Length: 484
Image (cartoon, rainbow, N blue to C red; front, side, top):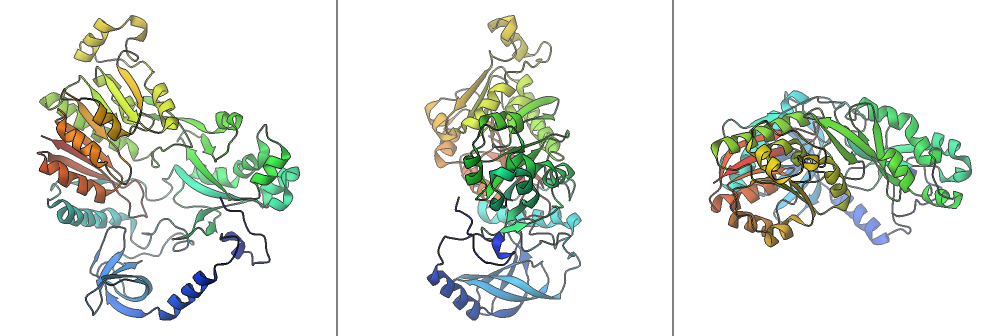
């Protein structure tokens, strides 16, 4: 990470990051763009993916307008222009939507998050549903089911996981950690920049995370915990900004992680446990875990229901559950009692070690179930519920699918990153004997793209649900149940 530049800038400027030497070409380009920027009066037609309003210029080009709502008449400053589209930002709302509200957070428009605060919280799911129905029709050439619903939870104070930037006053050095902690600050990355926007309290973070940042966080990061590092190492670390992952497990325990964390500190402060659906799941703050524990049980229930329906209908069997992009083994863990065999596939070693722990905990199979009989026949009593049925594989999902033949109607769960399924994985799934797949997506656009390809291969969309895990933002997670 670049060193923080020490010079005679103003206090606010000292929260902005940059290269070690000025780029005069960039400076000229920025000032030129500013002088060429135009203000236009535009009528907003609709909301599009990403939460921007869409309008049309007189020359026919589309303009994506940040901070605008459908139906509004806005004065818009153009910020970006290309031959076929433009981007802009609302300067003034001339005719406001009845759904517009005053943003709650004073850092709205400065911080890089919560870009939908100008839309009433109770209306956000309705707007997102319209966006995704149109996306699905345009990209997948199909309709979302009429019963498609978006699950919602608390609009504020919901976020139990975040990444913040810790900025110390390196002038104190490691010799005065107490003073360093008092002068430290936390911030988020700025909108479309690496600038750091400091904050005192974030309204979407849980109370536990806000209290942690106001209280012990700075002392712990400044060296308050027992750490086997030299003063020189500490001084070097505190001369730069530190990206810190923080996690609230919902039971009063806060964990955190930053790159370069000493093992003893990691063991003491990074590992956490979360209780979901009757299972205790281990993770740590360096790996991905869901950021809205309040709404997560609804996703769990929907996945369990889809699995049960597949087993009851015969579209899938309890012979094998394959969990691709499995992370810490979350879905496999909560479904462990339903299958004779479970395979988790995850390329990140940090996640895999937790998956091994989470799936090593014995689980009671339903009495007289096929899974119970099979396990009893093939395993000794000491390892009956776990080791006989579980394998945790460290590999890219697409590589594992290509190298392994899935010749039984296994239940398949995929939870890929925003980029969606690699084409090799998609092709391998189509060629397999999988007849029911549960696709959990954090990007509706790539989900629609992948569904179009599965549809061509004979899969149909049996059920779809949305989950508004990130209120005040345009982000939406979705779950598709696909059958053939």
